[in-house]
Length: 496
Image (cartoon, rainbow, N blue to C red; front, top):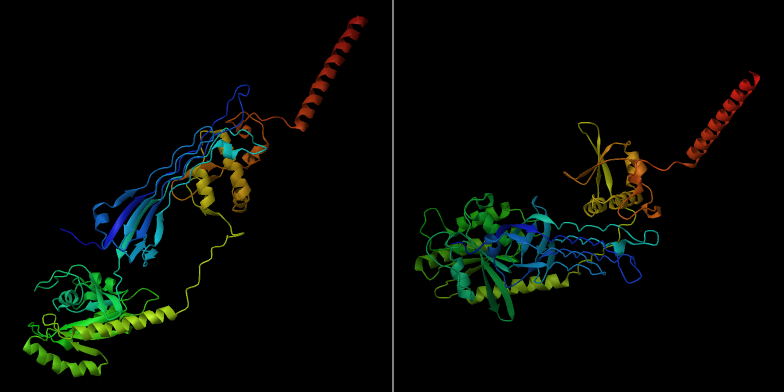
């Protein structure tokens, strides 16, 4: 039975925004007292929260699909729709959030960090919010936009001050059980530890956390054994303790050769950018199981070689508890020194979010098509506006054309070489396809037409002044010709 999970894929779907309402207020003696359609409610967000009480991603391993509530529809009498309830997902401290391509979205290294991983959709505006002095009674409302939907990957990297590294069955689990209140599984076979164990150690006035993680073998940095699972959890540790087994009975193994293998695997593992390489962090050596007479002799033999390499060496026994006090106090000094150095560093520069200013909010990309070039309009605003448009309502379509024109889409299409009738697609993938007609872009606010219609879609357009003048002159000329013909006929009859 799985009891610990440190890597999982979540399938998320945020709430959809509610549609706006089209409504007209009716009162006694005022059958059309103005628009009063309310706005739709926003869809619920999905939020990740770093919770120190959570230690595993097991619950998401069993239930990876999470959905937030949709926003409510707007209603008449200026009543807005209900907001969708957000969904908060507690994750362990140290969880890294990545997208499907492996790009890091957030690193939840501090308790209480909140990250909106799937934002909900926007609620659509009702016709009351769309009313202006020039468009007093809109016959349309905006639709709600869909919430974010997709997959994210969660990876847990243990946050601890000290990591215990060493071969399987070197005594790491026994050591963390002896110096803290942690109670990991302890057995006499390799890879007993299948997931990290955390313990809190009190050394005088210093309190720090120790991580016992799966053991290393040769080739661990290439994925052999549980190496990669182990090394990922060592990334965040301040100091390393090399736990060496002095009582091993395996042929070809001794503390020095074990240490060389471990160091080679630590050197081959690439830590994320900005972090200190594993071998450049403070390291101490713990020669374990010295309660065995042969192990004590071997520890005395290899200790000078280890000290020659620059390591602080401690001979310990988790059974007799020999040397544990000296080891924990030495680790406490290293952790306290590191904390003081971190506190002395200048605070990171605060991130200031400023408006983008005149930066272009969209772009036009020309693509090859079967029947000619396709002009694809990309940008957050155009895509959102298309999602909010009810294409069954001519007035709503005209409003969309006006918004795109004011944004400069018409001019950009001209620059890209688009001609009337060209195929225009807004957004990536299979989005809405338009046959572009520039003549349709004029101010809808200045037009008078029945609600729910747009005169720009009327193919029988009104004649211009010049056309009416020409028509008038044609009629006058026809009348004059008819009179002249009648006069000539009368004269002929008189002469006869």
